Length: 283
Ligand code: MF3
Ligand code: CO
Image 1 (cartoon, rainbow, N blue to C red):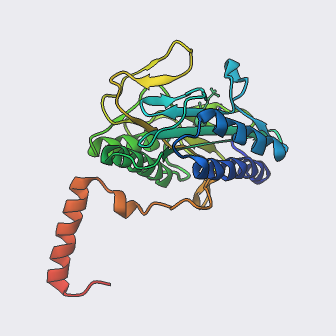
Image 2: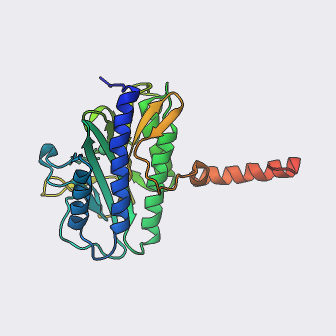
Image 3: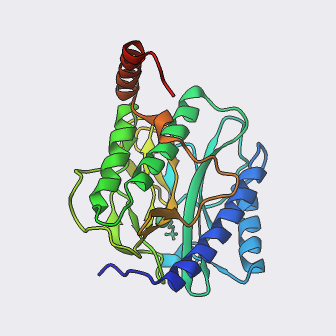
């Protein structure tokens, strides 16, 4: 069953997710060569508890930390360690909290110092794929429209979508129905209704989509050793469209016109060129 939340419950989910957003901002600013993922985890846990909240992942099915910190070929669920981050790494930071019985959950991928062009593109494409999925959130839409938008955007840029992990509903549980795959046909599965809250989380590999889990029982890495990125937002379905509950204050909200697939971008330029010639005016 998919639980629809009342405005009061959405308010509490907003508070939990805004705490996640604030802490992720702090962590993002702290990422630099020499810093360890264990350092980040300590700051995250202290900040969460200072606020009277509790880390959501710690103890979840035995997970040992506050953060998932997944570096380079790690896709998700990387366990914080004493290894120092290096210039050129990318790190996906995923964090959840429970505040006042409601969950917050959000993730982003951050560069460490100067990264390769491929890494920068992978991060931008994954972030933009999440924004394309968010743009599909409307009452009467379909859960599968989200995954379809993600897959289309990712594959148009030559990257691939991880199949083994999915997004999810979120509320008084970290993982509620529905599951939200990051791929598939549109117009399938459950309809979106007012009050649903969805944690949308594309995981994107630079190379092949396959992943495997390391012997620690958690860390998922790419099979081919290529880079992977992960962005996640918790989003409420409202009568007036999506409300991104975990939006960070410093986050640049992507203009979807800037992230259309390359072929579409060319088509759009051609069309614009033609209408400019035709009418000679353009606002
Ligand atoms: N955002 C991830 C998810 O929704 C993080 C869960 S990590 C775990 O699955 F440790 F809690 F499992
Ligand atoms: Co999640």
